[in-house]
Length: 303
Length: 303
Image 1: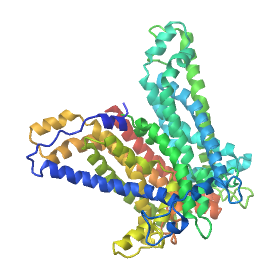
Image 2 (image 1 turned 120 degrees about the vertical axis):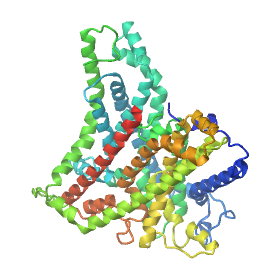
Image 3 (image 1 turned 180 degrees about the vertical axis):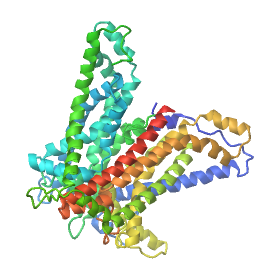
């Protein structure tokens, strides 16, 4: 069972209550702990709040010295700038957001289609050097992107994949397949193989048994895995910046990073586009919160 | 081939078809990984023995281990290795201490644990691009909110990103901010998995709080925590995007990590051969770290 945020909610306290007559005094100590936790929470969340605040501040207040925390004028101009260009048409940023949707979406579908059957096969069959194969698969995911991108760049230049969405989709798929296999293997392991055996005694082939009986049970797991793959591709920056350059191919991360290229930086716009970029991720992450431990360790840790 | 989940008396044809099914399900994913991960790395390995340059073109001339000796004896590389070491050790140590502390404090609360955990996890889900850009804004020497707060506390202004020492410190701080939730999440999974009866037994024995922490909590959480730490170390070693956005390696070369230096050699210096050798050496380090990680992971799974 994966330990999840939800489990953490429902489970009781880990420790029993300290008897009141303890050295520290249980109450004073609890207050101290809550205070410390609050301070830490404020420190961790302040940058996020500041980002949201900056995105709705008027430019004058964005650059105010000292910084304005509460008494600023609210505006949605920055958000308008994210989607509409100054000349009235669609902005470059909105095009890059669409590109991100396409690239992340298609690569996630491909990684799922390739990864789920492989995960099932690794879970069900005794294969030669299975452990080594699985470890090999995971270690491809740990390669430093800056190193991998050098030969990929040369390879793409040979076959004309530089600055194409297909090129990005392929590399993101390759980057998500190891994760999908590891994550899905955990889910497949949880479905008893006996279901398939029973189906096969009824005359189904192994393939039919997988398709008709196991796969429907895997749907929630597939959904969670796909959401993580989507988040990884959506947030990816290194391959995007080296393998694409033109505005109509570029995904959102390099486009947002490009906003600080000039001599003056419109931080309100940076904040607004960051918010637009981050909100879908946070929503998706919230949806898969039960599987976060497995997800962020690339499917390696499950408890 | 022995199939642990096959029905009691499987026919020969079924065994054969299982085998083909496994091959058919695994090979598409494997082919993708071989062509997008292994083949590029092998190409880089070949290039690392040549003087190939991506811009000059022309045939690659074989120069043996020349690139490797050049990289390994370069004082520039040594300096980058030191910077990377300081950054990796500093950031991972800080986030481990902070993440574990937060997890421990959360695990002792009865109410609001789910909400607290969710809130603390937000930084981890953001793209490094968003994180880097936003901290760059907050750490700005003139209108950054950090200096503004220091000012209202009566403290001096700090040029966070434009001075050698503080720039590396800023990098460590930002990485810690983003990845403390990761350690927290894993530590919390470990802490909630500690059986309650152990604490009850210790409490009957009137064991002190510190004794219980040292003899029950820490030994049971440690294996999982170690995995999280190793995972973070690998990620920190590979890190590129945050450096690129936050400091671009500056001021001077004070925040240039190995990843960033490889990028400069490959894409600004166009010494593709040298960069490949450099990259292969980094891959070796990652492979060693990954092996360590997988070994601990394996041990954890067997227990």
